[in-house]
Length: 408
Image (cartoon, rainbow, N blue to C red; front, side, top):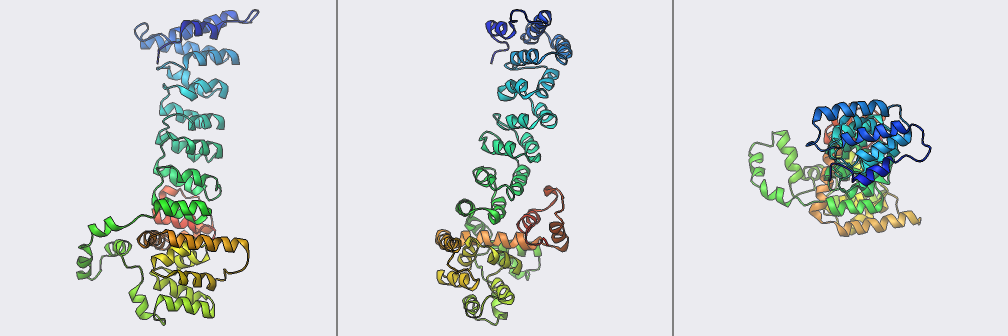
């Protein structure tokens, strides 16, 4: 990129129309802009700074057209005095546009200042820039402006930080149109997708399970020898026990089966079909499937059916047991919505592999129940405004997933 405009372009930008007032001012602005645009071989940094300061003082009270002419003149420079950048970026969007659109001279500090001190139109232009950094993206997301966020998510050359994605996931609860755009972003991690699942539409849920339901085979191969070590220690280390429970291949809870009045998980499901689903029976099914009752309740209350399919596939239940559970939950009416949900549920069951279903199910169980505490429930009920980055991953998941369930 050249340090200056072609001379002809500069002359046209500042050519005064016949009868234009303040012709001397316009000529002065042109001369000063010319000096600022000179290469470093012609003017040193101190001289350029002095001229830029004088130019800013004149521009503060100059007309719109005069400010616009200078903005267009300097927008193509690879180095622009900071005082000029700040002045133009805080000006009307039509004046800031040439710099925000393409100028490579803007630093993250310049963009952050514009985000804080300019308008939504400015922020949207920044969101559309090439190579938006993680720091700038975070600042754009924090404002919660829908048009700005949508422009940022569509910008394939923008980079999103983990914190920015967390905020966007939370925003998507109320703004569902963000979900498809979020799921296309490479920065989204499985933990974020699994919680987003709970308020996503059917197509997005399918995309989440197809893309983020990962195998644990690598983990299982890597830590296979740790299981006997932990067993020799009597499973006393809670941190090790919790991690290995997530990794192990077996889903059903053998200890729960030994204590259960039912011979198997299948028998508990049939009991629910025969006598109707009760709270006690739902808790028993959850325990037998290796889940905490809170996680099981969330899955069974979900009207979409996909979560129930994940649970049944992970626990090794046949498709007939899935249909039985659906019936026991009272979901076999003749409505079109229920019929469509049943179709999606069966398709999800057929689509997902057992190991991948277990990954999703165990993440839900770990995050939705292990982090739940009286304080977190109270925060959910009261819509506590605590920053998301002050919560652990399970706490954020529980806070978002149960946000509607615990409200009075």
